[in-house]
Length: 240
Image 1 (cartoon, rainbow, N blue to C red):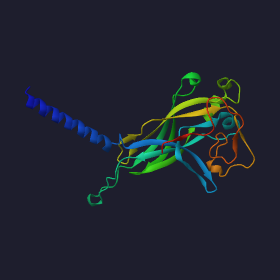
Image 2 (image 1 turned 90 degrees about the vertical axis):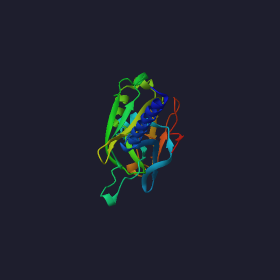
Image 3 (image 1 turned 90 degrees about the horizontal axis):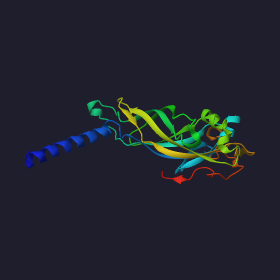
């Protein structure tokens, strides 16, 4: 093959690769980004998310199980990277919105966590508009998972002052409004899990819809009764 033919063939191949990459955005494979996790922020007006992202948190499976104190709640920041493709002159509506049908939680089952399921799924009806940064709360660790952990006190050496890290990843799955599948990247988070390390003091919640006795953030009057182990209260700062 002559040098000229080889050059032409290479250029054509690069053009095809470029076209396929461009179609990747249009087909939604790069449409949705899970950018960060955010904690609970309570106020007299209700519940919202912290401004800064978090990289972890604390969850008391004892309170979650014996007091029915709720899931481990966390906010997700989802970003729709696509632009509107609406063209009213041609009678075309915007189909680049993303409807998130479920959130997938995948657990790191190494160490003492081999009994946990590989994944759990949370059904949602979240719609992320084109160009939007959307914050939505989820129960990342359910009371069912909390009960499974609570029933194995040997994980904590039967002590309330032990914090055991649990790593898991989160991914959003859905589709564009034209039916094209779209899913986000996976984002990892680590929760320090304990068994009866928190208590609820007098005063109660600022806003019941925002609170979980089983985690310190979002609660007006939750406190750590014992520390130590491998982690600290609440979550650290991360990117937003």
